[in-house]
Image 1 (cartoon, rainbow, N blue to C red):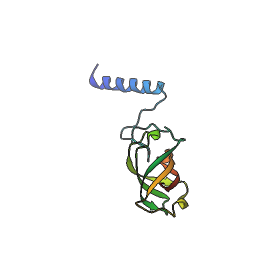
Image 2 (cartoon, rainbow, N blue to C red):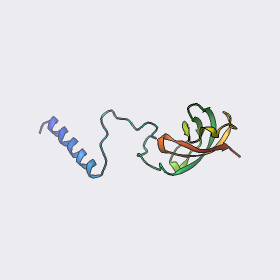
Image 3 (spheres, rainbow, N blue to C red):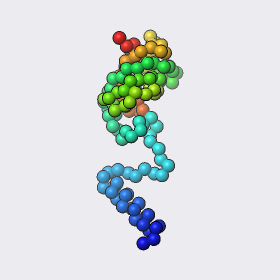
Image 4 (cartoon, rainbow, N blue to C red):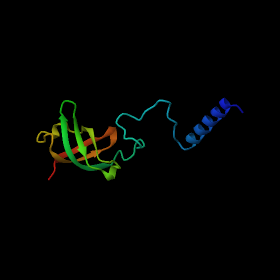
Length: 121
């Protein structure tokens, strides 16, 4: 067997194994879905609601997003990080200001959607 035949055989075996597991091999150069968390399989915890605490960095009412530096969220398997979230209700932020400590609830679908946000007590 030459190297080309060996390589094609290896690719075929991997494709068969992944097919048997119900998985598809990623296309060369493919990246994760927009907003997907690294190393998080698609659909993981998408329906679950999580609670986080952090600092509100910015609010973009026109875009319906907030940027939050949050502590680790163990229920979602997320480390502490700064990220933007969509707002399920963009009108939910009028009493909040950048720099304020907050607590919020969110789902991980579509990269993160805040379902509740309030000043931390």
